[in-house]
Length: 281
Image (cartoon, rainbow, N blue to C red):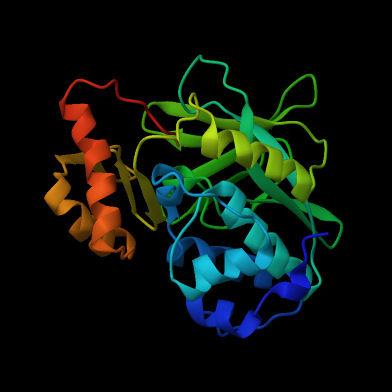
């Protein structure tokens, strides 16, 4: 289903710094998920530059592995699903509604995976940016896990909707909700089309780069760079167009051509001129 035959496993393992075992076990799944999330940043820069976002595996390997770039949920989880399939894991897609922005009711646009190991389902998500899990989360009601200072939980609502939650200093907060219906690569393609091109998409017209790690989360949205910690403290700074390349390189390991940085920097400058700010996750 996920075209795992098109993955260059050696190149992928080198990219994420993985040298461990590869049998389809829970230990392998955890180690791969963690290595992927810690290495490959979440970013929408091709969308912001008005470029197409192909989801075929060869294109994903060329970008996220060969060019050492990042990607957003459809790219990250499509690549991760292909890797898992190549190693003998069984994964299915899910479509989620983002709840991290409060009471709004956004469309179902987030893509994640459910991977089954020894008959047990695990939520795998390499593409939810700085708020996402470092490792798989057991997909059962009431499950709670701590990962590098960040705590995640699963709640099942009355209609069967499953919710990924996170524990913050003020209590539990929902991240996203999803139905048990399985999605396929073609469904990711439809969702990707909206997120990469629709004028109401929060990924169109602004720079987004995010990364999570044990004890720290970093996020750049337009010209706002934040560093958050498990105790709730957040450092904030404004990033000028001239500083954009340095921040992308130092905080996210993303290196771009100067002409791309100029175009992306202009998007941040639009905020200073009065354009409305859009929150992402």
